[in-house]
Amino acid sequence: MNKNEIPYKIYLEESELPKQWYNIRSDMKNKPAPLLNPATLKPMTKEELGVVFCDELVKQELDDTTAFIDIPEEITSFYKMYRPAPLVRAYFLEEKLQTPAKIYYKFEGNNTSGSHKLNSAIAQAYYAKKQGLKGVTTETGAGQWGTALSMACSYFDLDCQVYMVKVSYEQKPFRREVMKTYGASVTPSPSEFTEVGRKILAEHPGTGGSLGCAISEAVEVALGKDGYKYVLGSVLNQVLLHQSIIGLEAKAAMDKYDIRPDIIIGCAGGGSNLGGLMAPFIREKLRGEKDYQFIAIEPASCPSITRGVYAYDFCDTGKVCPLSKMYTLGSGFMPSPNHAGGLRYHGMNSVLSQLFEDKLIEARSVGQTEVFEAAELFARVEGTLPAPESAHAIKGAIDEALKCKETGEEKTILFGLTGTGYFDMKAYEKFHNGEMTDYVPSDEELSQSFNSIIGYNNPNLK
Image 1: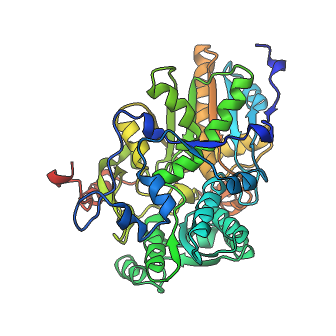
Image 2 (image 1 turned 180 degrees about the vertical axis):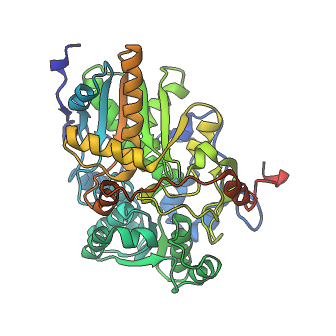
């Protein structure tokens, strides 16, 4: 195909917006292990999960068989404010790298929250409103999820209480203020306002917190307030379901020009954007229709897939949430305060963990400095300043493109540009000033953390 036949940006029409989400689990031969009740070690029931989560979201969380789930009209109407999102051919990056590879990225930053998180936030807020709730509680790392949820709750007139990882609360004050602009209350976590927060602070004085800590606090608050439920921005299967709209749009745009990716790359923290981007493509692989290479890129400072263990573990540091079988570093693992706050989670979504265990996807870890080098290169040649999280995928795409330069292969690479980095300038400042560190946990540190994982040495939880 002639280069000039493919535009720099491929847009779908509003009428082409996907009408259904795709559930990866429906086509998995080996289904992800169920969530377990930590008290009984039995699979969580609909009733037990309903204490914490909205009823419809519980139904989606437990559904391993339905392939496609209708998107309610109210959610589709909101999506139209910023979707369909563009698929971009990175011509300038290709030229800069002098690679024969063809590079595409799905850009999810074209909304005020600045990321893909709004795709699930509006769905979860909709179901909360439909159930008649007063409000919701949640955690946020870098603040992208918290920002997205605050927007969604404002739209549906719901109270929104956000527990933001303390180090990100301090590093990213403007994202915090965007949340407040949309009416959310924002508390740095761990805090003195919850029992679990006080316990974590006693055990880890001066800690910058983690997503696991913030989850614990948000769940405790939700359980203690009538008319409130807890919602989560990643990790859970319901979130991957909502985020499948990313991949469904990307594939529809590629199909318009008969484009077929060879490699699909996403940054990986809890797994929502990677799972969403790869959804329709992994469907074809699972069904034996086509083959693709899927690569998860995670920070070397929090390497849950590349150095973690596959075991049942708590989803949160305070151990108030269910047990999930996943690749994990241990719920008590306290990651270093790197600047990709959205990737500082100790575990990985159970679907992606099972796919990795089955060798259907790959994973790599990268250092913080090289990630920002890739981010700066991308900003200079493609004109968009990426979020630190997204820059992990950029780094992975550049590495694969340079391999093609060495081999002469004309592979097609698709990666997810999950969001913009305009609220991450403190991180860029540290990079430019040479103050950025590349902390990598030692084997000894990880070994100690593994020993605290409930399923690590428990033969009943294998």
